[in-house]
Image (cartoon, rainbow, N blue to C red):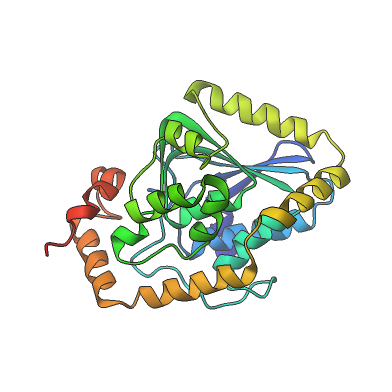
Length: 279
């Protein structure tokens, strides 16, 4: 039953045997909790057993929230403690296996993508965003913790050290145009053109021989990916940070203001992080 539930929220649409679309549909805001990771783990198993598959495109049924953020109310199950097939905790296992899969992963982004959700799209091979409708960021420092799902390890390779520090320490949203200019995403496209562009690219890659696609991706991976040890260190440090009293204070303040309850606040909450706790 749990597997069926997660499959509803991480839904696979097999466009062809070589090209799948995966739709996040977990009302009301696509919060990232154990259900999302269960769905992604099931998806990875399906990908592993589909030898003709070349490309998977990840998108959202909710135009306001691609994926929201890590569930701060504790509904995350054992994703930071249970071990996945790679030998890493489920959270990190999911991202590492997606990155290292012979299948190409593309994030088609509309709406808010923050924290662990940003780390998910960073684990994808490519990211394409709506120019008018993207809010992308790593707000963890403003919440009293720090990124733990690969953000601090992957961002410097993409945007450079200074901009990575701006993204992580500033803890604010980045729009599509800025994200493109920084290298956070491949391109920001007019919203009306996003679907057709990504679909055309995915179908083009899906038309090529899988052995060539996977070999080329593997060679790029060898010179561009952080080590599993560094990723694990960051996750362990994140779990410790969640126990800090100041982090607990900031998380409670956010929940009291309406995070995960009020849609208006959920859309804009990084804006208030600088004045969240009076000193």
